[in-house]
Image (cartoon, rainbow, N blue to C red; front, side, top):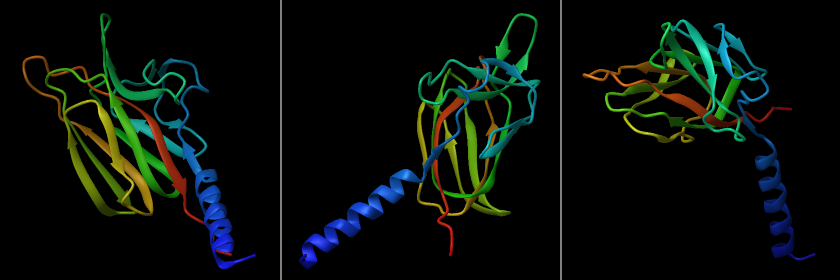
Length: 168
């Protein structure tokens, strides 16, 4: 076997190992609708300051979605704050937002323990990418919706991350 073949085999093995370690937060294993806070999943605990955590229809077939909801007899608004604490530090964190309305705005921060790694202001639907940060232990989503409409808040889904490699 020559050096090029050996290098190709090593690269293939590394890529396979990396792909195999990708994880998600899967809300579809739970019933859609209201849930009490905190919500425990195998990889994380999720809490919100709303009346309930609401698992809704965004990202069906892709892990589902969650929001911190305030409820009234006539409506549900996903304008609460969320705190997602991983059971172990992770890398390559990314997720998506859905449900944007005029007036919606959130500040999303990622932490490694108590150290703030990065913070972003979001005012649209889309992918939120924190893959440049390692050792993430917590995501804090602070809803800052305002204006005449105040927005209806966001749902969050398509969470992906990778476990830190174990040290022998």
